[in-house]
Length: 150
Image (cartoon, rainbow, N blue to C red; front, side, top):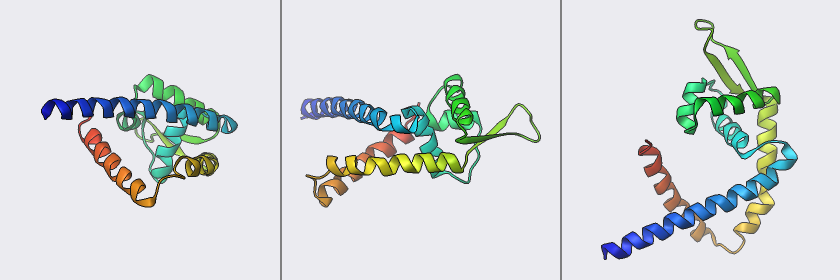
């Protein structure tokens, strides 16, 4: 019984990896018209969910599970593209506060709107119950992974 559960868990993990790879590829194709990468989209989405909060690179690196140099590069590019605002800390000039601006909000929201037909097509053969059950299982996994970050 334990061996069977372990085998199912391994297959599930492999399937999640494949789904991740396929959705990443889909995302790349659909972000081209917006001139942003999946990493940039992920950061903009994070800021969209926390629109009223400015965050530092250190805070973002922890939340986004990215290294600071890589994150800094993405943040600077989004700033150059006028999608994020960066302000120096009034007390500690080395610290910078980052937040999404109106153009960043507009861009990420437009990207989400453009995904709607694709998402509808992906789930066209699913009924609402299947979708809700899958969402509950994914949320359970997401909570565990978030709680057990390294």
